[in-house]
Image (cartoon, rainbow over all chains, first blue to last red; front, side, top):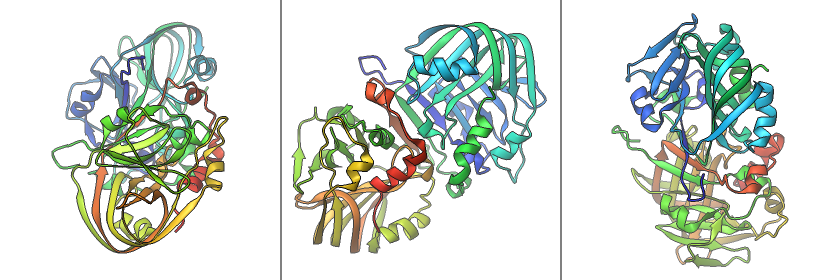
Length: 244
Length: 244
């Protein structure tokens, strides 16, 4: 937020708690989602893959490792986060990996209690992603899916990391800490980022003063969903965390 | 949310997690808060009392048991929730107390996974409120304040309950379940509602599809605040819960 009181908003539809309860049916169309931002991440109906949204273009990594360019704006998503890039702080980072992001980077930028968007571009020496496989009803919990999902690695790949940082107190709602997706420049390789190393990346950081949390209140599965509070935070961290 | 996709928003400034960490300085002016709604609850700078906002009029119960009508729109608050009444479901309830609200009412209206506003008016046979006493720096934690705060009871009092229901997964951010304040019709008695009984009340319920969570990202105490996740949920519940 600049001193003039500009509002900077991260829009989130759905919660990981609801996915954890097995509510994986899509509850917002891409058309409606994209009204709230041009850039973001998410998943499609039935937990079908990992979504990367860059400049209004939507890419879906599916569990055979391929990437679709999605143009159907009526496709639905059970969970997604988007924002409109603004007030960006430019970044030039060297020797980047999750250890550096989780440690020094969070401290230097005082992120621990705020929501922020991160975009990093460049040549990666190593990338590891996972891609959630599409589920059928009756849906399992997100945790069960996360335990058996395919992973894909690449060395020496040019691409972009896009995603969000969330404060720990929101770790029952969304992924606390970093939740990042990756897509290669050639749009042939993408997924939920589990690990990476890069000698030098450029990009930007945006700190939000507002989380606009939208809930699918007309969806009966959402309204009736049973959340296991005792295990929720750990299950989300286990399903959505990074491995480094 | 109506079928036409109307967005219904609960606006919240600050978090109870931050109050729990002892960040009690005001971070939003009443002027800015009231841009987001005409009705709500909160507290003033230094945890100074319990605030009730009805139709744009702001009342502050202070810890000697008196009630101020606040007209200074530059007064600041560290935590507040407001909304604009709309799409109201009218209520006529009999034999009302926290047991009924927490049990049957939540089930009948399928509130457990949503944010909602409740307004109930009528003759109360018994009311018990607490009023947070103003704190000075260095601020204690909200929990310490809650443990020594004055309570006030009234029998046979006409008044209004106003406040919110929040899903359990947001219980590290705000008060999970009901967070209700009370004010008498004569504006002489008010506070954070700990218990009540009423033979018959009328009012309305509003279910939100959006939580607009605003954070004081320019405030250094907020940015640096240390949250004790191990005790946070229980401390918030202990500080902000009802007694019935």
